[in-house]
Image (cartoon, rainbow, N blue to C red):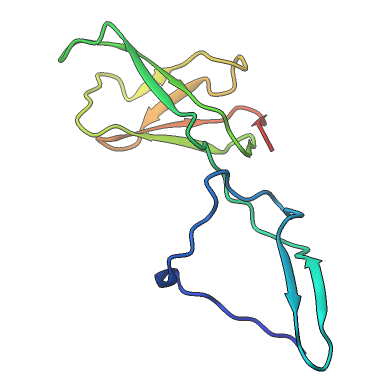
Length: 133
């Protein structure tokens, strides 16, 4: 007999700061059912949830209001980006002159360019798989 239930977000459950890995082995289910207790059993399928933990850092070269700046974003992923996955920076109040921007970083060519997709959002697309996992 199949069973399913959903716990509402109103209960305040939060995902760990380090995210959740695909099929993470530390997530368990058990039961103390009178007619058949079940010891801790690994949950076989889990949806991944990515995280940057507290590693994100945004810095600027020539940081003067109203002037063009070079911007550096540093982060460590707790998940892998696949080719075509997007990374979006939300930068309210920032200005830009070109809708497309070029970028360099490590690994070389991973996020080669960005595109302003709105007045506040700059989106970069991974050119190939990169990151933790």
